[in-house]
Image (cartoon, rainbow, N blue to C red; front, side, top):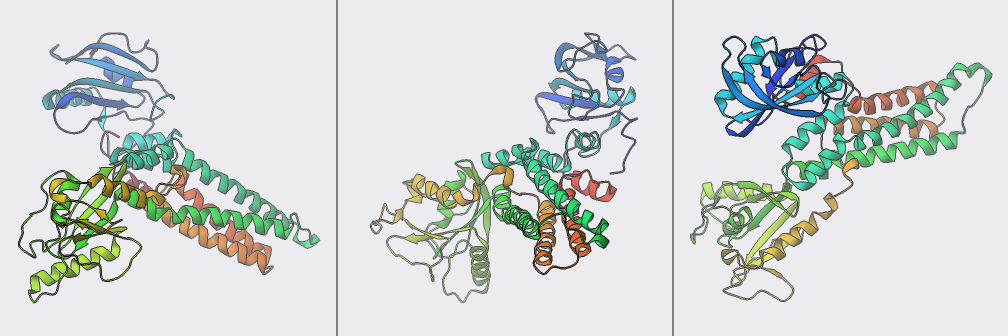
Length: 442
């Protein structure tokens, strides 16, 4: 995406999902938004309309006078808009033809088609959002579960950025004291007790490390907590997958070794997104194709957050080893009872599945941490890892009484790494990469 002249251009796009629906909304933002829309609008005088008000009227082709559609316009005046610019949203009926003609009308009046994420990019440039808040906009659009949406909303509201800003302010305080010592190095002056500086450095390192450590859980919540459904052949794994997903995703058969490859899909349970993986039944086999499926099953088990080891209650085959992430489930209890105290179900009859889903939610509970302190973005994670490393060097330097100029360098590096998460980025290539994942209308 090439950087156009933001201050001079007015952009437009359909901001609702592609396709046909009851309503479609076009968004127009820029210095000439009101002027451009006024040329195709018949209704209230938009130049006199108050900000954050909605108005009913008609969209017309100014050249032919042809009526395109009835519409509702919502006006947001600068700087109190999403982008910080004059912004108008036009809601029309969801016909694909009407949507195309509306955009064509806007272009003929002087608007330009928006690039991916350009509305949000303008919000960053105009100071309405920091870069972390902007990235959270994409996350909330893509959120597939209540918890993922809660984390993204917390980041959009600035709660996550506030944590980082507080850490950065403490680092700036630390940097100020060390820079003063450098300025007065010839007088042999210390502006802070080394033990106090060490305590502050330890606090910063601890908090940065905790944020970085939250990425594993944040990534699982965002993409789906990985659950491998494993066990011997014909234990009912594919039947269980279908029940958990609520659809016939996997082929079910009484023939041993029916599932030979990985089948996966997601389902939301109690506000969390789970990524269920149906694996090939594990057994000794001379069939080379089935053996490939079994090898893939073992790999899925090794990388899963939780493993559901399904046991046929009438012919139990327990997992080969004890693993705290493995949950043993006795299936086919309509044919044979399970041992006392065991989690038991009948996947075929949907019997006691709630016990299983409740246990899954309980096992995932450690992943439900403070949204403002949960990292879901890989770019942020990398910056936090680098900040943790440089802040650890600060601690080592203070403990070994290294020269102040070396300490100051590590402090500056830590500030730079934390600042890269929230501070607007000026590198065009990196900005393009960040906003490339956005939809056109956002």
